[in-house]
Image (cartoon, rainbow, N blue to C red; front, side, top):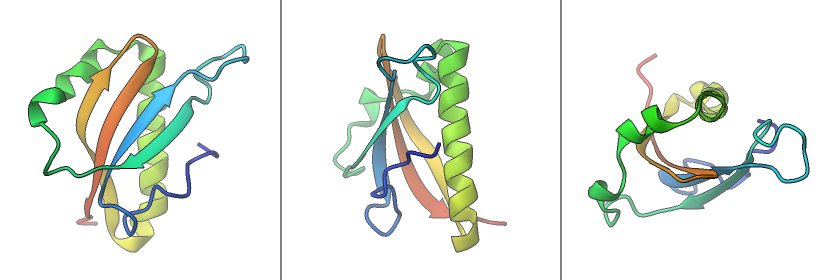
Length: 107
């Protein structure tokens, strides 16, 4: 994803919310999706609000967009000994809200 927000940085916030939504005015609305990233307080976040099983409810093209984005993000972080992991997912009709947090990488 060439348009990752510059704010998506573990130094800025160890836990961030990423919103994937369709890009208006293109023939392939999810290629690439719009990406909005926001820092959040994971301690204050209600775990009952998010369910990783929601990922199974996504259409294939949304799963591919989210998985490719996380993999690309981790390619950038691997040099620093970190990786982003998914800690929550919430699906809407046109958006996917993903909560990621940074952890130390074992490799």
